[in-house]
Length: 283
Ligand code: HXC
Image (cartoon, rainbow, N blue to C red; front, top):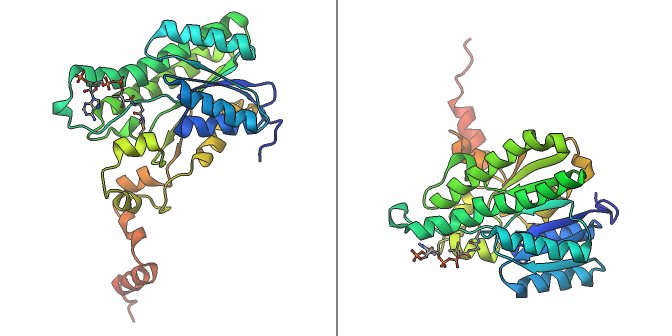
């Protein structure tokens, strides 16, 4: 589907691009021909992503910044643009999350997740958006949320509240910044087994149970998310804005369906039961 020309003349910034889904997207963009900037707190994973992209023959740069701090974001974008040229796409991927009973959250625990996810997304979005508006170039923003951005979720209250805010931000700016030819979309992934997410969110022994809630009966592969992001960031999606695409193997629909659990039973047995329950024809 994608060639090394798909993202030619694109330079994309991926926050949290040193690991997990951010790294997978950074590599996917590079394979499709983009120059890639990665930003995060720890230099080592960022350097590793840049080296992996360079090993593919791609062009990449990294800068260390905490998305919670707007001044450090601005300085990082300055240095990345000095190295790679103007950035014309942003992926808000950096996130913070952990499982906790909500009544036990300290103010700082709530604050740290909301600062990373919601404020961090605002800081990077505003930093790049201002540059694009001033330069009159347009741009594209993709924010990674989750399916509980609209459902809410027990035990991840700060993340759920923040991701709902990020989704509202994407939809708000899709309308407001269409005037500047800036597209704003979101992706809502279900479970993808990355170290960062699963070490914090998957309780021991919970993987089998989690799989039972996914109609496609497997977790996502990072490159599947990267392919979707590549499409949504590319000019192939130039009429798409304000959209949130779910990629979760059917998990969130399953969670709300009255009879969805039947799809997990032995299909021949289900058919026999349903045939037996069918009223016999009169006469
Ligand atoms: C309760 C906790 C906690 C936990 C930290 N805190 N972990 N409280 N339960 N498990 C509290 C601390 O005690 C502290 O409060 C406050 O949170 C800040 O913690 P720090 O470690 O000082 O903060 P910081 O170093 O900034 O780290 C931020 C973090 C950390 C969010 C806590 O986990 C992190 O850096 N995460 C980044 C990567 C990540 O989370 N990836 C997963 C994303 S997955 P006090 O009061 O003691 O000072 C995702 C999508 C999931 O978001 C979708 C699934 C379908």
